[in-house]
Amino acid sequence: MIQQTRQKIADLDCVVVKDPKCASPKAAVILCHGFGAPANDLVSLAREFMETDGPQQEVVYIFPAAPIELDPLFDARAWWMIDIEKIQQLMMDGETREMQRESPELLPERRESLTRLIDQCRLDYSLPASRIIVGGFSQGSMLATDVALHYPEPLGGLIVWSGALINAKIWTPEAKRQSPIDVVQSHGRSDPILPITGAEDLRDMMTREKHRVRYVEFGGQHAIPLEAVELASQLIGEVAGSGTS
Image (cartoon, rainbow, N blue to C red; front, side):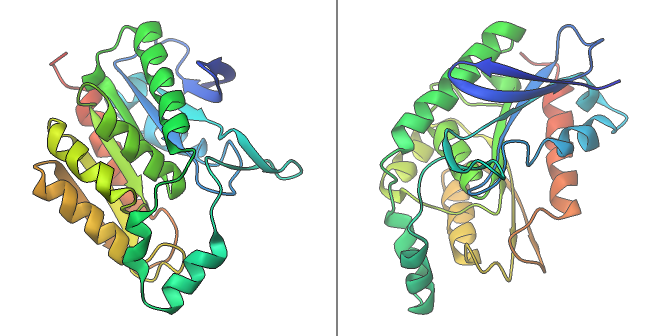
């Protein structure tokens, strides 16, 4: 049986998925949806992870909703606003790496919110940082990356689906400071929204700073393919099944 509830954790509205028989989860996975998606966009992945015959069943899965409401009819949300016209122009001009200089004004505030969620989750379930995985899709994965790099302790893992390197001036020294993190990253070769160069540069920066990156490219666009879900499930199983605290 899988239990799905809505909870306010720190200052974020969340969907929480877990096995009700699991009183003490072995790990927590926090996944953030992308720009323009509904709050429950990634929730179905919890069932896929939990159907694995392994420690993924003994994990609590948390899906926070971004605070900015773009369209209440479809529950479309955002972590921060995006200048879509500027991005499209940069892509047309072949200046995609210019996006790496972007430092969204709301990013520090969102980092603080997600960090508080992690802290509350650790308190609620008596989990060390090494048993917390953060991640997400597109904009949500960028927020998760920012939080993982800034967190005072190394987290158990980072999942980056269709993300990219932004805020490079800050992320690069934080990646150097942070102890090695296990990272799962995927990106479509034909992604029309976030060109693959941004993903490659993020992978290279993280690898250069000694983080352990498992990277997969696929022949699609802006999506999460099966192999990326399986790779994430593998990471979750490793963290939840680890004998270390």
